[in-house]
Length: 263
Image (tube, rainbow, N blue to C red; front, side, top):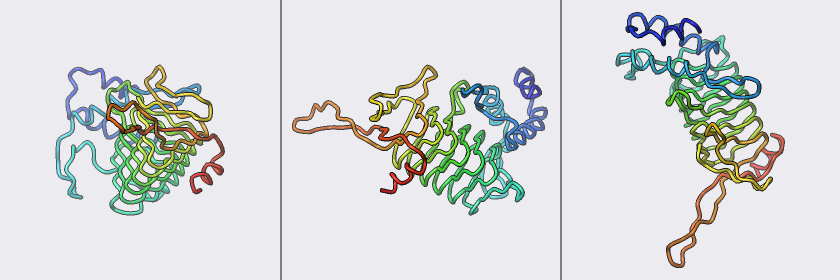
């Protein structure tokens, strides 16, 4: 870690000096030794130096054509997954950029994409047409449904990435972006959109969840969030208008939540 931070502080850094350390850095991300965000004393903290190092990877990369036909910076490329990692990549249409931690038992369904800096813990699934953005942090036994978008936040470097904690279910077609934190055991129903500026209406507690001091929306543990609507003022004669909102309708165990979504 100290080696990487020292390199960030060098003013006369050149590509020849940077590339060998960059390859070592990607190996450390792939192994989980380095990650963009970590939970410390119950709170998530961003390792800004990791983001800065990833940005250096783009800066010092040169565009090439890879053997698979893709065109990208030579500092990027596809992550190599070994059999002993116990990761399932169900088709060649699964794309994972190099510099992603993948825990044991993770499954990727075709087609889907995971960007650099992401962290996906043991037993999770990334379903078809899903996106895990750069630096997104995904916990254990998380199901990311088909067509879901887990946004990444690489820049600004101090901004929180999207964080999905353990045992979370993300329904098909949902979008979770702009540093949102989804706490453990929550379920996000199909088609829900949550951003850093999206108020979440908690119909159980009678509250409105707004961004915290870090600019994040935090979805509580065990919450069930579904798409809802809120009436808004209409300036069109004889027309009633409403806008889509995320709404918490229940708190409960994962078994109860799964039953609720099936009904």
